[in-house]
Length: 303
Image (cartoon, rainbow, N blue to C red):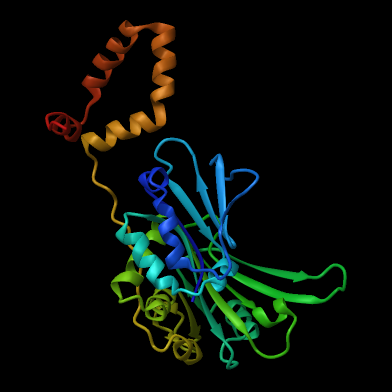
C-alpha cells in the first residue's frame, strides 16, 4: 500500500484553482475545502480537505504542494493509484512516497531480522542502520521496536517494526516500510505508473534491490555468494531486483544560467551595488581564461 504521498503541482494549478479538481480523485466523505490558520513549509496559505493539506502562495515557482499522510490516504474513498496517475499526467513532481508491506502470517519477525543483523547476514545498499525502542510514558506499555536501514536524511530509507505493538493489539502484524524522497520518490511513482499501477510488484522488487537477508555459509566468507534467506524470498514473492538509478543531468548553458538565477543572483546584485560593473568585467576576463573545453563548447550554443 501507499502510506504517504506528497507532491507539488505547477503554479498554474493555484491560479486557476484547478487543484480543486483533485476532489474527485481524493473523495473524502463529508470533507470540504477549508482554510487553515497559517501556512506551512514556506507557503503563506494552507487549505485543508479532510486530513489532506494543500499549501499555496509560496515563492515564485513553488506551485501547489499537497501532503497526504497515511491517515489522509485511509480517508479516501477513491483509489490513490488513480490520483498518482493524474499527478504525473499533469506534470506534478512527487517529493515523498512511502510504500508499506504488512506481514500477518508470522513470516517476518523482528527477532529474525535482529538475528540476521547480529550475524552480519544482511546485504544492504546503505552502510548504517539503527534500532529504536519506544514505550508509552503514562502506562509504561512497550510500543515496540523499529529497525532502520539507511539514514533519515537519505533519499531512501527502510524500516521494519511491530505494527501490532504500536497499535496495542494482539496478534502478529509486522510492517516493512520504504520511505522515498525527492528524485527517488518521483522515480518510484513513475515506476508504479509504468507497471500498470502494480504497487506490490514495484515495492517488492525495490526491496530486493536494496535489502536482503542471507544464509551464512560455513565454508565461504564471501558474503556476495551467500544465498538469500528463503523466508525473505517468500515474503517478497521471489520478486526480481529493481534499483533506482538516477542519471546525472548533462551540463548545459541553460541549466548553468538557471543555477545562477536561483542560487547566486542576490550575491551578484550585492557585488554590483558595492563594486560596480568594472569589477564584473575583471571577473569575466579571469573566468574566460579558466574555462574548460566543454564550457567553451557550450558557450557557442545559443539558448
